[in-house]
Image (cartoon, rainbow, N blue to C red; front, top):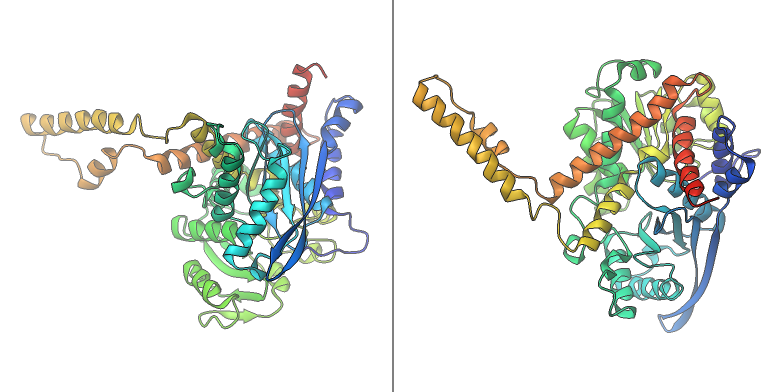
Amino acid sequence: MSVMVQGEPSFRDSVDLMFKRAVSHMDLSPGLAEKIRVCNSTYTVRFGVRLRGKIETFTGYRSVHSEHMEPVKGGIRYAMAVHQDEVEALAALMTYKCALVETPFGGSKGGLRVDPRQWDAHELEQITRRFAYELIKRDLINPAQNVPAPDMGTGEREMAWIADQYARMNTTDINAKACVTGKPPHAGGIQGRVEATGRGVQFALREFFRHPEDVAKAGLSGGLAGKRVIVQGLGNVGYHAAKFLSEEDDATVIAIIERDGALVDKKGLKVEAVREWIGAHGGVKGYPHATYVEDGSVVLEEACDILIPAAMEGVIHLGNAERIKAPLIIEAANGPITFGADEILRRKGTLIIPDLYANAGGVTVSYFEWVKNLSHIRFGRMQRRAEEARSRLIVEELERLSGDQGLGWSLSPDFKEKFLTGSDELALVRSGLDDTMRTAYQSMRKIWHERQDVEDLRVAAYIVAISRVAATYQSKGL
């Protein structure tokens, strides 16, 4: 849960303060800056569902921050802590995030005040369909206007229900599947969407570590291999980030923090095993292959190289920022560092890779899914075998030259197999995501390094994003 500390601004205020800090470095008219900052609209819905013999009333929100581009994009979260300020803050972050990674969307967000663990699958489906119905009939879910996605407490299953509800209400809309992203692949989804946000965190760190000058600013050196990582939150994002970094980049996950405590092992935790334990037991307590710490929040303050907050907003705040030892923090969650904590950490020299860049993998692959739904063809279907045929021609010619000329060399079977495999949908999605994360980092980095008045990546990210939103508004005549 986010922690409220006296003197700390709310999540919504934190986002606004970060926005204003960036605008102070820009040459924007006050009127245009205010137009970009404000949330355009928030719809609150209260609806009843008959469950277990009585009517239960639920409260939900859909907030639209900016329609400088349409459709607007943003997830729907299910949690008891959902409230209007949080949804509006998340919608604002979506605007800046989409602009930063150049996905052609405005920013939106949704939330439903419900604890998904309190209801079985059939009950959750009834709740989800009714919530979707209330939004769809007001065009707050629509392929051309407002396209939700999964967030905390929701996943492929809920998105499939929403897509089906939209199709039932819009029987002649040929693009109905594009009304929501994050669907299962068999229901119009795309390969690689579930892993996308965690994969994006990995690609963001890889790009950061390609720049020794930037790595040195964090007081680190070398690459990702051997770096000690602490992950807070082993949900979808934290799990995939931890798994990929440990299995593919040889980083060492020394601690995992969950809602019921933390696991610590300086030699490295097996992420997959911890995930399976949580799935079977509902938490990390009792896991036999690591040290259990009941108060997980203190583990945020342990020494490590990279800290990955991947759960709720506001977990690093005025009350604990001074004690955070990690030289590099990558915000896999939305808003995990409050505005006040951000000031303290920057003063200490902590380098922060900001949320509007770090967790943009989800919306990037959502964009690919939306394009796939509108084009009505999966990626790779037209070109994969043509790629393979061209590759085969090269391989066969090389083998012929080797045999005919007696050159004494041959292609390794591993190379041949890899070279002859054309790009399928998953490979293309990962390639597009990698390119997006690299390009976005370089756009932030350029501002960060070229402008003396910009001292951190967060301000640089906001400047890039706000500039792009402003340019779109100006082209509309504002």
